[in-house]
Length: 640
Image 1 (cartoon, helix red, strand yellow):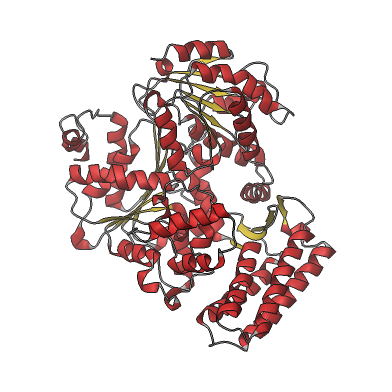
Image 2: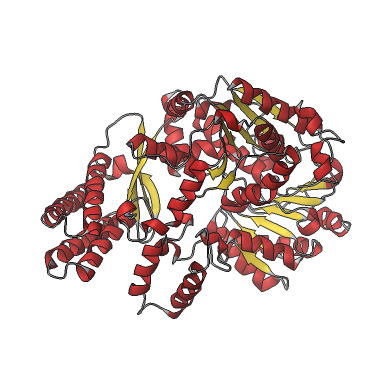
């Protein structure tokens, strides 16, 4: 019986001296064990403190039978949780369950160094700025000793560092078996190890990338398994939509042009025409970006592509792609890299034609522009049928869990998006005493979200609270703009360390936050979930506003279109449930253990003034509520 494993005298208590048996954890583990045996589907919302990680790992490992070739795939939403599972949680459970199989961690391609691209970048970097040269030397030195090639091993390299795309490969520029460094390729070695392992820890993006690769008939990235477990499962619908759609970006086209020019300069100096044709592709791609006539933003490609100016630029880009195809065709067989470029060019040409045939029903056609780049995208309005087909192809158990899957106690928002109507659903409440451990504040007299000068007002009002908390605070924002404004304001106002997302890797920032012991971390997106800071190292979480996604955000827009086609209310059926789930993720950062205490502040009066505010308030644990920041300061000062 799995319950005995979690009992006060069970196997887990022998490994963890301070282990506390939790009723909800046992209930979840029994449900997981049952579904693994019956090969069914299970959806579990396990609130913070349930111990859901152990509740799915233990039955999965205990059910394992090497003799029948069963494998277990555990998929998470973030690299941070992937690493926590592999480095911290799995070793404990392996010891407690006496598991005898093999375990490996596999990340997506962009996380591994590509030796070939590193060498090429070093050749091209002689005239680049000094800061880049310093990073390059650090990476080259690390590359000589690393066994995995995982870029996360490099200290002090920002998660969005400019150099990372230049030294990693993607599906477009990987040379595969033709690569001179293929035998020593880190991603090939990682995938080979994963195919031979009994338990593989991956992330959701890699799971869907594997489906895409299998569909093309060009192999697989992860092995077939008898059990698939998805932690942070609330992220799956969005990620599935991205992978079941298609996209072409200016980055891909410019990278292709650059690659062709590199072949001219290093291998085929006599073929000046290929360099000229590549330059035409580069210029036409940049002109196409300018034709959008906006600084940045997203919109309907169906509507935009009907404009005469866009049609002319699309025709011009297509003509140049066709011309480049003819130029490369004459030189096939003279360079392996050029042959690979020819294949990519053909793929891009077909995709560009498909993206300009905007009348297929059941899809959202949209564009996204940054200051320098664009992407054209097709997203299916619904992925439910497609996801269910994938589930039914495999004779396996499917387990979906997260702290945030339900809205108003119902799972229909999540299950309908993935077509999981036949699945068992289980909701488990947190064992924490929120009434004693927390205080929830919606401050009075704050301007409405979107009001000019709001960031200045927030800094002024909340600086005393952060001082009372002695730092130890997360300020979670819904936009990068607000995040940057607040970080600037707090750095001018507070004497304590103010850390900003993006300045270092996520893991490095978390370690620095805990190490300081009195820091404020201002962050967005990736710090709303999958972040675990226990004890009083984190005593205050502040959220700038209700996390509604913009109606122009492409995936949300596709779902809004789908809801309208089905006669539903897009706001109440799509936008509100999604915002509630994100909101619940954010508040889940505060209390992570039985002894934690802290204050949650949401700087959005709409929680009180709008009718839909009750939906958010009712999704909170049973926290005492106040409108007074003075009460928050008193509560924080009384925390030991």
